[in-house]
Image (cartoon, rainbow, N blue to C red):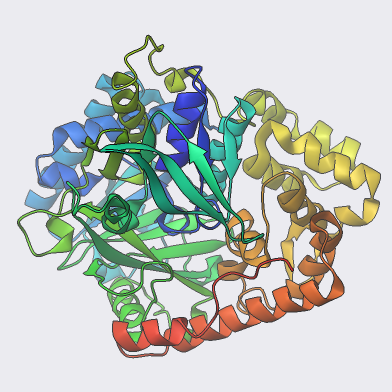
Length: 538
């Protein structure tokens, strides 16, 4: 998301910019977060007020202006287990949280927190054990489909003139003496290698920062450590409640997050030193989350309740502490060598600030007059007109023949670009039918992912343009053949390529299932690596 944000920032300053992504957009950390846009309550305890205030300002911007179709408020219950001191302590923290949001000038995006009795809390979350709390606090943050948001940032950059390419891996940096003058890019689909010349190169590669800094033949100025966080997805009916939960653990915090017809439960926080492309969730990780959430639930969750599991890596700037949960979520930007800017660290919520800071550093070295960043005032595609369309969802439903709930689902995914999806249904009414095996989505959404949203392979569609891979018990296996047949004409696939794509996806699911039965990181990683990564079109 930081790379996409930098491309948007540069393009809207009038610069010529190219964005290359080694795999699919958001295929790394940016599709595997807790899907929260938040200030970070636990950073208040660390007295990191600046980071929290900055993140809360970005939260307000995203909800109110930049991406109201993708980012929306979500309530959280903070259960209290002590009667007096904890309510005072946590209440003061949430009062400060709300105050920092107001001082940012963007506090109106979510309601203020409220104090609740035990009865009031159980009314909102009936699934909580009565003896698990003495009362609660209700507060608000926001959530986002991170992969779709990242794709929208890249797509908006392209709309403002950026050249954007996925499946394009940087394999080397061009040099003239000490200066970096561009990149050597390998097209994973065609096998061609392209030399791209640039006056400045921005390296925004997250957990790969150490590796990509090595492309200039130097150790690099930053050291980024990967911290693994895993999440479980369970059906909404397994936990009765109208708000999310935030729970303290001995290591960090645990979230139970409402997610459409599902809940997301996470996260863990452990050091990861294995392969970065596909971090694996082990049986121990899954057991940890189930154990902790079951401490407060009246009806415990079991392994059979788990629909999906995903694991991601946080790029933490390495500090003095050995515990990853204590490492900094601050970001840093530096000209590590002439012509090369590296941006590292940070958190998803502050991607726009990170991107602005990186482009500022690149612009400073251009020695020409370039306008300041304007992304604070540049809504993403689909944002303009969204509120009006949301108010008109009944009219849209009547015109399209779709149920109003289906229209609202589409508006939350596409905003005012909904007409582009509905036009596909007008041209081919069969695309207005639900997808077999994943009826939350229309067949038109699958075609649109390939025709408009840059999806190149089944992984892209099932894991990122939609969340079918984690929102169905079969991980998308029941939908995979239909999806492949829908996108084959759009992407020019032969019957043989369709078979290859389906087989690849089946192997990916098998490998993930195997890894999640393994006892530790090493065996889980080994099992996950059993599936190949990319299926080039041949």
